[in-house]
Length: 437
Ligand code: UDX
Image (cartoon, rainbow, N blue to C red; front, side):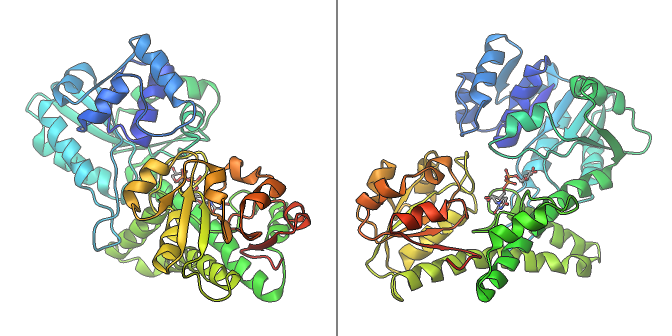
C-alpha cells in the first residue's frame, strides 16, 4: 500500500501499517521530510513512532519517496493523509492538497486501484473526488474512492492506529472494497475492534461530529467554569462529581485554557461552513458558541494575569510554561499557550517561554518571545508564572524549589493540574480558571 502525505497522520499510519506486516511506501512532495523519514528520523515529536519507523525501515517493509510514479507502480491501495487546513478568509476547509493528490496520482495508475481517504473532509468530498478520479483515469483503469476517517490523537498516534476504538469505512453504492479493507485491518478485526461499514457521506460526518462533540464537551465545562468563578464554586470538583455519571464521563471535562491544535478548531469551523452550504446552517449555530467560549478562555487568562499584577503587565516578567497545544506534542498550531504568551507580550510584558519539545516550532510562529533553555532559567526572576500546557514536567514542579527561583510567588494554573494545597503551603498565591482560590 501507499500512504500519501507524511505529516502527523500519514507518517504514523505508514509506519504502523508496516508494523502490522504490510508493505508500505510513504509519499510526500516535501523532499526534506522524505529524506528525514528515509534516514529513520521522525520530523515531529510523537512518542513511540521513531522506534517503529526504524524497525520497519530496517526490515524493508517501509520506504519513502517523493515520486508518485513509484507509488502508483508499487501499490494498489493508496491511503490519502494530506492536510485540510482552514481556508484563508473563510471557515471552510481548504481541499487544495486533497485534490492535488487525485490530480497527480490518478493519471499514473493502471489497472484496479483503491484510494482510501483518511483526511478530515467536508461531507460530499469523497463523492466529488470519485468524479474527479473517474475523469482522470485511463481507459483500462478503475479507481475507487473509499473513506476511512482517522481518529488518532497526536501524542497517542501509534496506540490509536494499532489499537483504535473503532474502524469506520465509508463505501459507495456497489463497492467491492470492503474485502480489501478487511484484509488491511485483519489484525484489528481479529482483536474484535468494531469495524463499521457505511455510506461515504455518513463516514465523513462521523469524523466531523466526533470532533464537534469533543470540542463541545470542553467548551461546556469551560462555560460552567465561568459560572463557578462568579459563584465562588470549584469546577474541578464539579467535573469529578458529574463525571461519575456514566452518561457524562470525566474525560474531556478538563476545564482551563481550552482546545487548540491542528484539528478541533478548524474542524468545527469547517463543519459549520459545510452545514451552511447544505442549507442546514441553523443546526450547527451552537458550534459558534463552542468556538467563542473556547477563545474566551485565552482572554480570561490574560485578564487574570493583569489582575494578578495590579492591573497592568507592562514591563513585568512573566513565565509561560508550555508552547505546544497540549502535552507530549511539539505541535503549536492554534496553541492556547502561545496565544496567551503572544497577547501578554503585545501588552508589554517581558515573556519567557519554556516547552520541553515545542521550542523550535514556537520560535517560528512567535520569534519575538524570549525562549529559555531550561525550565529553571525560564522561572528565574518571574513576577508571575502561568502554566499553559499540561506537561508532566510542569505538573511535577516542586513549589519550594520554584519559589526560590522566582521574584514573586504567584502562579496561574491554566490547566487545573497543580496540587493547590501544596503550592499554597509554600506561600504561593495561586489562580485558576473556574475556581476561587
Ligand atoms: C483531536 C481528537 O481527539 C482526535 O480524535 C482527532 O482525530 C483529532 O483531534 P488532538 O488534536 O490530537 O486530537 O488533541 P486532543 O487530545 O483531542 O486535545 C485537543 C485539545 O483539547 C488540546 O488543546 C487539549 O489541551 C484540550 N483539552 C482536552 C482540554 O482543554 N480539556 C480536556 O479535558 C481535554
